[in-house]
Image: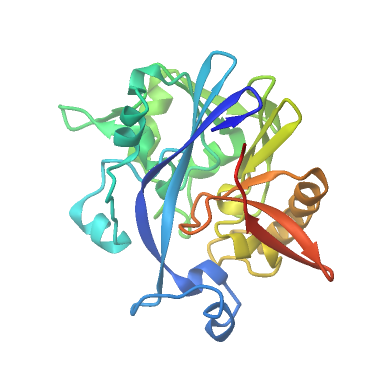
Length: 282
């Protein structure tokens, strides 16, 4: 699809099943199950929707999904499903090979979003999946991932990170950053200290890739529906308020990474309440 001069493609690395309580934090199940339906294990089916962008001659990938390094146990724990293959299969269908990617933007470094940045080499060590790409990450996010605490070390995995550091292709960002004149990152703290979203602007049209600022559309509609996974829920609350107000006033297209039912939407407001409606970029 085209957003102004930008070429965009959604490329899913598969579906994972996450605990519904984790997705909504303090919100009781009696409320959230009116909006989404869990399976018999109280889990929700979540996409791992990455974004491929062509902008000003650069081929850009936003996030990489869980990737191909998962053990059988990890696949079972996540309930990983790949009915249409993984990220690399999806890129191949577009005629894009790993060495064609110029830039990989990480919204953050949790393993369900960035595990695909590296792949096992023949010697059993991890190597960059995209050998020519520079990897753009917020500096504070990198620091938190390299030196995790007891809460975060289960998702900041060294096999996803160390090979990038050794490759010399790591670009650490200090705040909001222009990638091209049409693509930029904005820091959106809360889920992690330096989580970032990606804003796309071209020919009077604009979109934002929300990643884990709002995993599901309802997380954006209802400010206090904040996942238990967020390290600073009060920061999430204020960041969502700011981004939601801006997205509504500017008419932004909203790209959801984890919402398996709604990849693309737009906000409307009725009687003071926000709702995300499905949208199509034309």
